[in-house]
Length: 435
Image 1 (cartoon, rainbow, N blue to C red):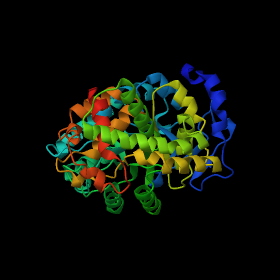
Image 2: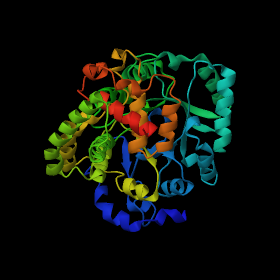
Image 3: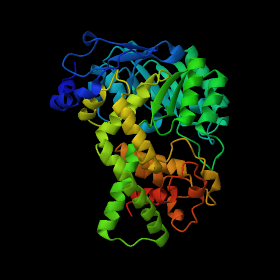
Image 4: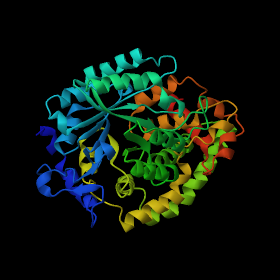
């Protein structure tokens, strides 16, 4: 067992109460007793079928991780699903950790972005083989199309031809697709629901990675139900939207404290945000929502309570997070959680730009990719991936949010959720460019 698995035990003891297991197991899950987890650690308490793959995955799984010790701790605690990607630049780290483990007990997924300028079988095959080389593994359990932004990309001949060859060699077992949302400058009408519904109907994709949380339930819930009927494995990301609320609150207070001069339109947007933050204080105080850990726990339990969910992918940055999230394995949404989430959905949800929505983007005269920019902002704020988020924003081959300062707010008028998105875009631009 890794020596790192025992770190921060006092933190675990303080959060053990969060790991209370519900009275009954989900029909697709298996609750495990203490004898099945690592002694002295929280450990995974539930494994669920990953659709037609037949593999039983830990209900909490590993998204992006940049530290070998943290990944070792996760595996020691029973995590057996690792999500990585060519663009994550951590495949070599994963490979070094996994090479000394029983490979058959770990499900590894990688992802390839399909770029229009290079969709040949030869190119995709070469890139996939490089993934296998970096991961130091003979095979991938699943290769996904990374962030499929429209239905057309699902049917890329080069990808499927390459995957057929790798499958015949025993180098890839299953196919999947991930979806964060569409981008207006490519194909604005393609929502997550449209893309993943098409993927499910196609029949060649066995596993989905999708955005779903207690604020953004509509599209996700329908896709999850479809996956149940089609026996497709479901892995979740973007399960905790609370980070955006705290970003807005902190940023507004800082701007006012520093007395910075801003464009009048930008200031009016900040004023709107401030009014809504103040209006939310009643709920925050009543339900003690100014404790982010409680909201994170409730948000994760919400996802784990859905019997159509196979696993929740979480990005882990440190050992404290290992203890915090492992303690939630096998748990369910409790009445007190429902009150907190309901309160937050009425207050904080007004600051949350829904992942994979993109319904406002077609109204933008400058073709600003709203959904993508807010996703990068989520990386910066909620996931601690500041450098990566800023680099992605700088490389963005589209209009940036600096154009939003002098705009008439077409996106805000078009938002079906009433999000003050123009103000959020201005905040995101300031944060991602440090201006």
